[in-house]
View (cartoon, helix red, strand yellow):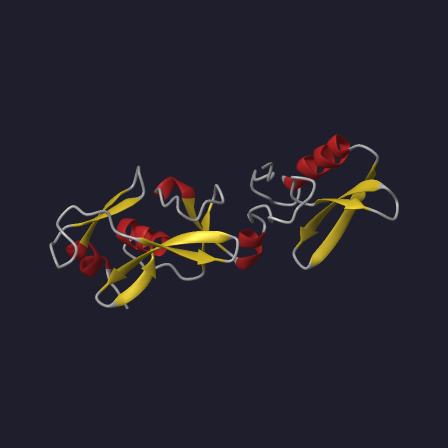
Length: 166
């Protein structure tokens, strides 16, 4: 397992920008080069960095660099952008909390998380998940009413402000 000492011997990390740079030249990498390659993962993309022949998520390395301990569990990108590795955008969470900060699916027709069109009733339905339980918040004639209901419920159920508008 990588340690903070090994990491700092190879890279520099800027907490404000979230960018890693090389502190050593090793072909083809030169001193000062920005490190990381993008790895698509489902709907998200993450920056991966190779250290001593092993690939690590830049978000994990950022927490190791700053805190001295490789994170166990889930590292959540608060803004939902897996490429934003600013230390202020990263937090350790449980899988349940991580699931509450998902990005909007590409096939979402309403443009908002938890709001779907019901063809059978010709209404918008607002729903939210609480752990393994799906909660129906109601059906609405207007999209704006369904969205408001969903947004109003998010803080009650511990969701991070990520309403998913495109």
